[in-house]
Length: 300
Ligand code: CP
Image 1 (tube, rainbow, N blue to C red):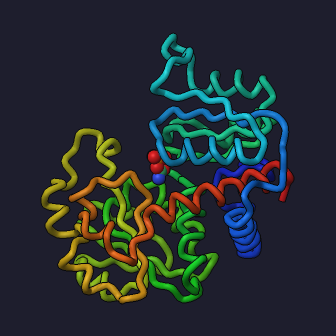
Image 2 (image 1 turned 90 degrees about the vertical axis):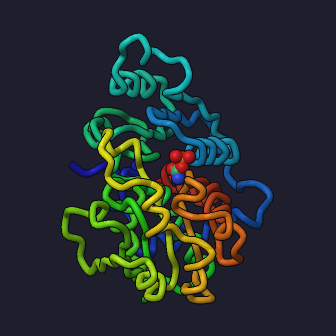
């Protein structure tokens, strides 16, 4: 089942030129004080899992493109607490004719089916461990702004197995010529084969290989109570810190999609390193999401 042409559940409708065009729009937005478009109507945000960056970034992007954001947050009152299912909640909000729906939910929800059953386009704001395509877009944009992507070697360190961000990276980064390798304890290695994917058991070797590095959060909420790997041990063996930063190439960029567990995936030294782009990712995310709203509302 393919999503509607204007929905953004994954990268099926995005070729290389679409990505470049979207990034160019984001660049234009960075330098203009306001968006050129004034859409009318509402953007419905339905967040069935917690969020800071994605939610506020899409809310800000909606405001700045003229849309009124309306929100359901799992942590605030809604009829979910009275037993309504997330699926029914989505159908009811869709009946209010928003221009677009931005949804964060668990893997159990069939977003593709829901997308077929409603009129507004859906933007995937993080779907279980399946996909987080707008995060992958902004990560790619952060690298694209500063470095040549064709032939770039990107090392992803940490809990790749449970990461929806990494899943979306695997889907889109090769479109732009980026080669991805993983690094971490064996228990975090993806279980399904991924074309051209390298794996490093040693962080030093991975850091020496790569042109840029992205650390991932330990996704403890997806470990279902199992101790996959002790955070302290992870920090000792795979944490990026002042000692191993020296192995990285001088021109390498350091990314983390957030939220960061400081002292586990990365230390304070990393935030102070001139190669760190963690807050640039967040800043770029606003403009990428404005550009994404434009594409979704105007059609590709
Ligand atoms: N990167 C990311 O998705 O952060 P939030 O969970 O805060 O949205």
